[in-house]
Image (cartoon, rainbow, N blue to C red; front, top):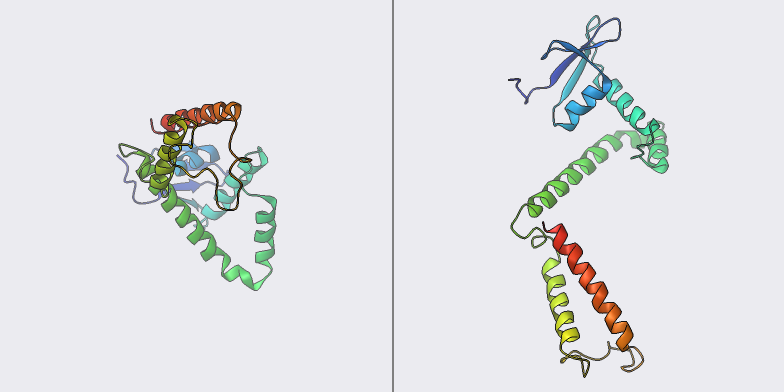
Length: 189
């Protein structure tokens, strides 16, 4: 079993073929991309010179994905990156990008952690308030049309009769609410 906490060493031969030192076989750029997606760190070394080619190959993997239409980097971001090479901002850009991706990874892991709890949406910020609003709305809708079960008939600054839903609109609202509840319950599974 390979030790996954140290980088997977890939050697590039003079023929430009890439050799996986763990499995003793040749690999492609797509194989390397898959190792990275699986969470492995890789290091690509030129066998003859000993130069670290990791950055060059990672950029090549990104360029190939972008050229196949898997556009993840918007044009304005690419333009800003090119500009940053010619300005003094180039010293700040790497740290900013690294911090941004760390925040993204942390956010994704927190969302995934919340999704694995018994009620996957319960831990998300604002969900308790949304649930309370949904319950109040359902009470108002199912409590009859006369006065809407103690709910104010109009928001401040609104006229009460003009903005009240008609019977036809009420059915549409109930249907839409039901569809939203179905979608939320499917997210919870």
